[in-house]
Amino acid sequence: MKEIKTNNAPAAIGPYSQAIIAGNILFTSGQIPINPATGEIPEGVEAQARQAFDNVKNLIEASGASIDNVVKTTVFIKNMEDFGKINEIYAEYFTEPYPARSCVEVARLPKDVLLEVETIVEL
Image (cartoon, rainbow, N blue to C red):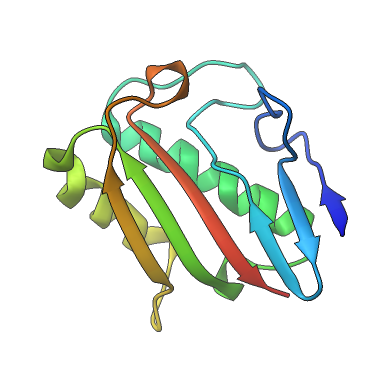
């Protein structure tokens, strides 16, 4: 296994790695919408979605891969009513053939953010 770290995504806020490479697969930890430069969380679901997807994209690129190599995403959202808005932003980052995806509504996320995104990437 190899650990991936970057200052272009939020640092881990617990005992875990930002990402791990195992064989030819990259597993990213859940990325929440923290601006890695300022530590701030943007307001609103659209801004938070863009920040979370930027964070995961930056983490993938730190491994030498591209967001086009994502094979599976999991999106955790605080409110399923935001599903449509998040989908629109998701489509700005991913292209056909789209990665497989799960989307799950959860009661609460770290730092009370509105979404968290994790990916599995083929290297």
